[in-house]
Image (tube, rainbow, N blue to C red; front, side, top):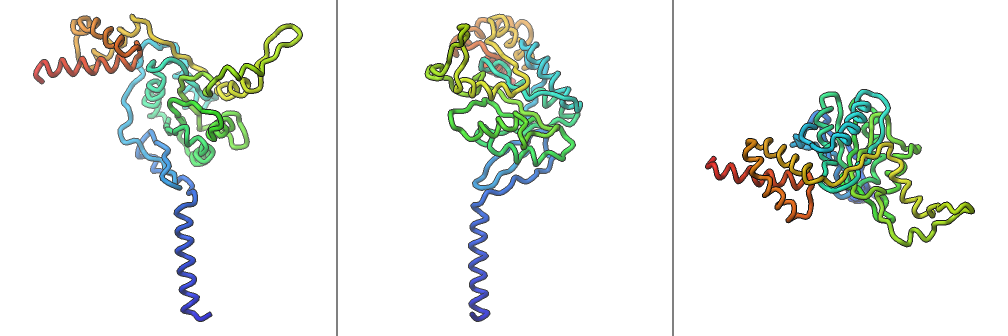
Amino acid sequence: MNSQALESLLARAERVLARLEAVLPQPVQAPDWSESVAFRYRKRGSSALLEPVRHVATIRLADVQEVDTQKERLVRNTAQFVAGATANNVLLTGARGTGKSSLVKACLNEFAPQGLRLIEVDKSDMVDLPDLVELVASRPERFIVFCDDLSFEDGEPGYKALKSILDGSISAAGDNVLIYATSNRRHLLPEYMKDNLGARHDDNGELHPGEVVEEKISLSERFGLWISFYPFSQNEYLAIVGQWLRHFGLDDAAVEAARSEALIFALERGSRSGRVAYQFARDQAGRHRVGAGT
């Protein structure tokens, strides 16, 4: 083979290799950690990246109302973690719109000056958790890997990856990483009537769950701290409405006058949640502002 033919063959081989590299999975690259205190893990084709969040939610702990017990437990756990003491992975479960994800964001704002950072990961990308843990293992910051509205269907691959990280397997998270997740499902997996068919009774008449039920419970049990949230009462809902209306600049007289409308607003949506209270306050404050001609 002459030199010209060899060069042509090598050029073709290089083009083939370049195409293969474009479709093969690429390891996630470290971002500029100084660009933000929060990052999103994103997949782009065969490559993955950590995107800095340019506008981090400004919510503070004082803004999250009527969940004082839940707030105290999450803040205590996060403070221990930031201080380098032992702390637990956290599962926040319960009624929608009651402040689960807001509390996590508020904790980030509270402790970011002390080195806390947050990486948001979709449940579909949980399979890459070991890579993320390895990426930040040598960093001086403390990282919360956050998954909002987490739940799995049967057979989803991210389930096993999360279970391994939480369980302290050979690919366990380092001392500078905790998992915080929110979910409307206490056990993170769908529960069916047929799952109870494997239950058995012992000689004393005690009921023991079957293997399917045990497996579904086992994932949530790996979170060391469970924090439960409950639907708000009418008075709690109105207190949150008032807090947000004052946040948007309305006086006490306007807050009192808005009570009836706030209740109708919640009734129309079938929920007295913190999210609904915030949405009503935004609408009411906007109408007051336009009505005042500003």
